[in-house]
Length: 293
Ligand code: NDP
Image 1 (cartoon, helix red, strand yellow):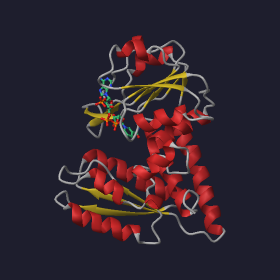
Image 2: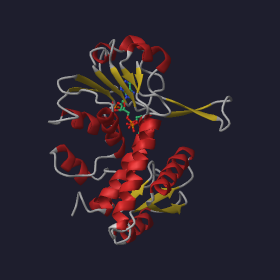
Image 3: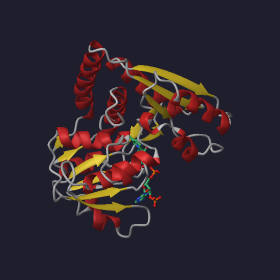
């Protein structure tokens, strides 16, 4: 079993991005700039946003955090998005989800200029991705692809089972892995809460992607010997054993599944770290006007 070490990959990729940013600036390019809107004080969102800001600083990307209290109305949030869409200095604009229930995530996602949609959540970017046009690929699927590529994991003709069909993880990764070329050309099966006899499906997987948000749901008897297991799940649970009072669990019962795998991602230290890297890469692509010249 080999660990798919997100921490090591993320560190390597941060150095690559930092050098790309430095070179771009040295050649007269602008300082890439990511704006993040955070509504309210959800603990997990605070952690994700501070991780993104720190990562930006580490690679030389400028970042701006715009905060609102959770009683902000949709119209005012829209107004801020319009302002940032029109700000030529901002290359990437993301709104941390989830939003309070009185605000439509769909409306907010669609309000972001597609050229600045470095989260890749806008329906236009998703549609372009589906038909193979240049687009921002959302950060978590992009992070998964990066892991697959950097560890030279073969995907052509493999059976890939994705558990979860959300718009931000399950659906896009299943489309990306069934695209022509590498990493793709896989035979992809998508499972969800209505899938019957899930274990009979997951056991077929050469590559198993768990993105269901149910801690330690995938057990050893659901995994084929020699499979590649990519655990996207992150669930924060209370713990008296950590300083923060929280610990993170993946969707895979790591200790029992790992010995059966050829490769496996840990949680924490796996996909999550690459998700942030993919966001940085998209911001640099935007500053360089590569996807939308
Ligand atoms: P969603 O809750 O949006 O989707 C979960 C999906 O899993 C749904 O399609 C649901 O099916 C399916 N599902 C739930 N329970 C079961 C079950 N018992 N059997 C089969 N399928 C099931 O989750 P997300 O995709 O947003 O996130 C999934 C996990 O990944 C979460 O833990 C989240 O925190 C984590 N995450 C991690 C990221 C990272 O950077 N590493 C980024 C984003 C998310 P149905 O559609 O039928 O309801």
